[in-house]
Image 1: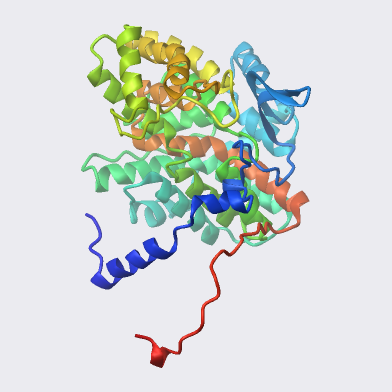
Image 2: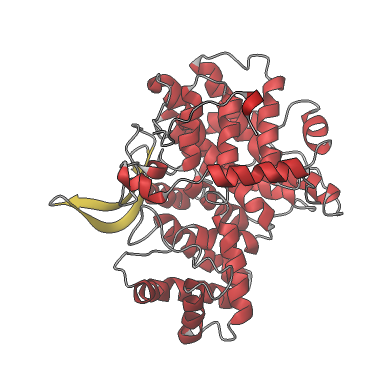
Length: 451
């Protein structure tokens, strides 16, 4: 049900529309780094981090040169981490959490001890599920997750303790509990808003994050190893992406104000919920559904390409002119996350009998860069990003779209907590960027004289 606004509020909204518009030319005039980006779109350097890095180009002879993308966690290439995980036939997300938080790769015994700590903290506090989730369901699971994070404050007897050890323990608890918070929020939504049955299963301490999540959202609690492994890969790939992404930067900004862990992580969830940040894979799935319904031969590059041109020309799908899942702010030649997830998705597609659909994804990935250059008349390098394949993977796992962005949060909280610990340990200065006021001074009119 949509809100019915009082007439006064509707009239006042028109004042907001009138007075809050800034001429875009003024940003150029005053050399404003709008959105903390320079004129080329590159992010303005506002901090230092040891946690993660994203590489899409190198500087050669003073000029940026595009290179195959790399994602780096604490100095380690993620591709090397994943190769070791696959060779060892283990789940990798928990190891990545350890690395991001502590700056070092664990040995076998250290990892086992850390897994045990996570396992001990996967259960939510006593009465939390009943009082904070089931009694207040939400139609949006990210809002429900943010509420659960903020509500955790009242269950923590030492919530305001600023010590590193306390902040670390709060971080570990939240990382461990996110899958249950999301899964129970989803079950409450199913019952209250969708009119479907609700299944509440307990997380098991001996299972990985991906195994627990699949177990929690499925009525029969059944999953297979291959399903858990590809979800684990997605968690590894989404755990961190440099300090400059909006939600991680939010953690730095809010933490710099010397607030508590729950407020900082709750703010990050709010950032990730935004349609410009965490919901891109949902838009990809909506776009792909539109393409599949309007292209008769998915294997025809000519037919698929013609429809992509219509989307770019704002003649099809949502008329935005955007082909979702294509292009990235940093990656140029390739997004390593997309490449790694695509290779796993191909194997899963054979198991799930989705080969034809996977072929359509590959066709779009292959032909879109040339189509973009022809349509836009630009030499900008366009590569497929991770959002293009993540939604497809989740759909093959039977995960509903409303869980896609919460899945992102289950993974990214590892990076958020690492950035929070880094900020409270090394930041020690509140973020205070400048805004230039561009309005002119006006003569004051007393209330009695206003008409």
